[in-house]
Amino acid sequence: MQRIIVIGTTGSGKTTLARAIAARLGLPHGEQDAWNHLADWQEAPLAQFRVAVETFTGQPGWVMDGNYTKARDIGWARADTLVWLDYPGQLVFWRVLTRTVRRVVGKQELWNGNRETWRGVLQPDAPLRWIFKTHWRRRQETPVLAAEYPNLTVIRLRSPREAGRWLQNLSPEAESARPPRSG
Image (cartoon, rainbow, N blue to C red; front, top):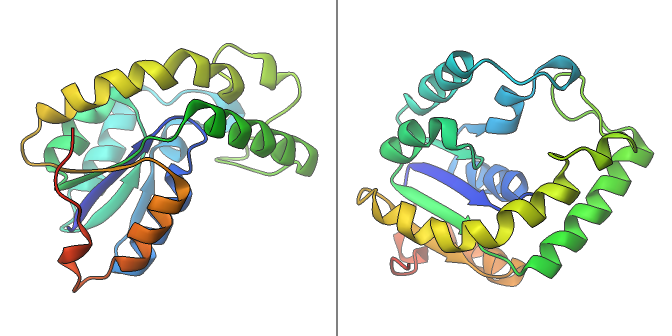
């Protein structure tokens, strides 16, 4: 387990878990949101985004988080492990709601000077709306998509408690921390 992708619905905790995995295994961490959201919430040009993913995943070991389909063919093909945070919709919605309020009220900078705003919360691609567009569809699509990449060991975590236990058992020496491949 040296090249790891962490995926899950918006707000499931991908970045938090990916950072923790990277720290525990001593690997670099890459966040696709940071490569995609340029200043003033401008979307990175496709070629620029793909180069960022390609460059990062060209290293011998890494942990990357994100669900971007526009570079899945690069990241998933180079990864050996896919960690899927498959949490219940209600839990993820609550996390997104509280995170959004905390970010807006605290004026927290996210990537490249961007901050969430009350006006932005209403945009079609805002996390609070995006979860309803993607959560249940991804739940159905992910096993099918993962099966197209036989190089991947899929670790499907269905609750924060399960993710916490899995992370606690994870170490560079502990390959036994992997549950069997699931669909």
